[in-house]
Length: 294
Image (cartoon, rainbow, N blue to C red; front, top):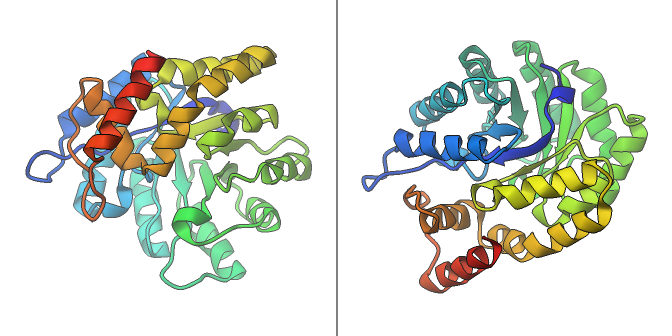
C-alpha cells in the first residue's frame, strides 16, 4: 500500500487501562470498532494519544497486535513505532510489519539533541529494515526535534519508503513548502487540530487526529466538504468543532479523550501516571461541549 492510498480522517486510538493499571484489550477493541463504524479512513495506534511512550515492551507488542488484528484490514493501520533508540524503533517497525500493519509512523526522539545526519541515519535504518511505507512525523512539541522542510525533503530523497509526512508544528507555511518542493507529489497530513481547515485547503491528504473518538461525524464532514469544494460549509463545520479541538489539545490528548470516551459510554480507564485524569471542572466543561455537538 502506498502513501497515496491513505487519506482522509486518520483516527488515533487510546490505550485503555483497567483498575489495576494493566491493559484492557477488550476496551481497545471496542474503541477501534467505534472509530471504524463511525467512518474513519485509517487507524493509528500507539501514538501520543495511545500513550505509546508509557508502555513497556511487552505491553507495546500486545497493543500493536491487538490493534492490527481488530482492524483486520477494514481500513489501513498506521502503527507508531517511535522509541528512544534507533535499535528500538527498528525492532518495533519490524514487528508492526510482521503483524500486518500497512505503514509505520516514526517520530525521532532522543535524550540528546540529534544532529541532522543522525536524524537522516535514524530514518535510513528504519527504511532499510522494513518494506512497508513510513510516515515521517514532525512534532517538536513532543520530540524536542523540529525537522525543517529542507531536512524532511532530504530524508524523503534518501529513504525510498518514507512516502508521507505528518506535520504537527501548526505552521501552515510548512505545508505550503512541502507541496511546492514536491510538486504536489508528497502526501502530507495535518497533525495540529486547530489548523484542520487550513491544512485541507493547503492540500493535506489527511488529518491525523484523536478527535474522531468523540466527534467522528463532524471530522469526516469537514474533510468531505473541502474535498468536494464546499468551502463555505467546511468553514462552518470547522468553527463549530474548534472549541472542542482546542480543549482536547490544551488539556492533553490521553487525558481529555479518555474522559470524553467515558462520558460517551465507553470506560477506558485513566491515563498512566504521571499523566492525570481530567478534573471535575474539566469533565463538566467537556461534557457541555459534547452535548452541544451531538
